[in-house]
Image (cartoon, rainbow, N blue to C red):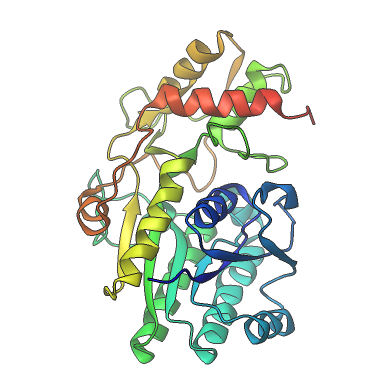
Amino acid sequence: MSKQTVLVTGGCGYIGSHVVRKLSENGDRVIVVDNLSTGFADALVHGETLIQGDIGNGTTLERIFAEHQIDAIVHFAAKIRVDESVSEPYLYYSNNTINTLELIQTAVRHGVPKFIFSSTAATYGQPDHVPVDESAPLRPASPYGASKMMSERILQDIAAAHPALRFIILRYFNVAGADPQLRMGQRTPEATHLIKVACQVALGRRPALQLYGTDYATVDGTCVRDYIHVEDLASAHLAALAHLNQGSTSSILNCGYGHGSSVKQVIQAIKEVCGVDFKVVEAPRRAGDVAEIVARVDKIHQLLNWTPQFDDLKTIVSHAYEWEKQLAPR
């Protein structure tokens, strides 16, 4: 198949920049639209076209689609902080749900046939069974999760009405790590990701790590999550696009490894990798956090023939730590 033109929204962000890099290395032409509110233009390392703008701006979207023949869209642009979504839900429904509707409507008007949507395990809330599979009920525990759930439904309904549009929804579990060559990684200001924050504490850039809740019904009282390396998640996007290129039907897929680690287990791994016994302070539970969520991953392996390369907690931590070390302290 001839190479495609792929529009990536939020392509200067953490996950988006890894996917953009892989698409370019695959030979695809990549156009990135990003408002740079949390992304960084220099995360585009192969000279990809960057349009600085907001997908909530209909004029910007129309100009992009009028000037470029878009073959596929990979949609990342979203707000992602669970705690912030609880205190400011309107930001999440506006930015995540309404803007996604605008993007899909524009894609349909311009005949774009393929759409990959960045969703989240937060759509499940606290599942009845762990590991959770894609058919489980969606009961999000936060406005963040709810905003993504609504976007999923919008995409499914519009695709049902316009069968020329096929999609893959990827429900991410906990993404961590960095490009092993340190070209890109997590550098969102005021990030709340456990591994990133713990690495900052280990480097003396934060005074202590807050441990939110120790009374959950889990192996050691702390939350359990399925951590996936950002490089493996990026490769799943290319596998998803290849799947759609083959004319395959739409699908919803979990993106994880199928096993979990507790917060205390992650902290111990970070201390061992960094060689620093940093300070940890117990704190109350955070609103919107669920006790345990781990992916069932049979479907993504079977459908996409996807094989992760970095399924090891210490490897994930090591790449995150090396990335954090070479960042200028904030």
